[in-house]
Image 1 (spheres, rainbow over the protein chains, first blue to last red):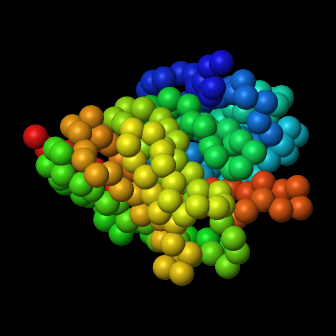
Image 2 (cartoon, rainbow over the protein chains, first blue to last red; image 1 turned 180 degrees about the vertical axis):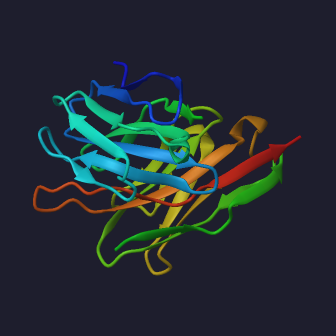
Length: 111
Length: 117
């Protein structure tokens, strides 16, 4: 039982490049989330998926897209990376009483 | 809309001292409450949760929290901290599930606990 896994762990991009962050959970949860974490700003919700086949914007969706590929997987795509997207990205899945389980994070640097 | 306020952004303490990390929330409905811990370069890990019932909740690593509905608070405490408790701590709140719906968490901005020898 791996919980929530994320790939890659680290990534360096040049401005304008694209990439996809992958997330998978093995807890059969319906809801999954993408957050970014920046110093002094706590966690900010980018997008979430309440169930397979649905996605919704969070607090900071601009510059991102998501895909809920199936119940297990929820990916985050940066189409044209900008330095402002330098951050640590966390995926989480949500259990029956709204407790969230987090992955180890992806540290992204955009130069 | 819900909000969570963690009253201290940083709390320095000495090893073996007691600590309290403060969390206040605002919500117009019944809530679930959570504390998470984030060690350096790791993801968030659930420390404890309040769903209903006893207002004193015990979690992992000797931490406990008390739900106070009248004060809308959920403060985290530990009677004697260790160097290894150095981490960032996040308080979070969600509406109680109803009508088959699950609700998102709203997180506070975190409190950095630094335990000094």
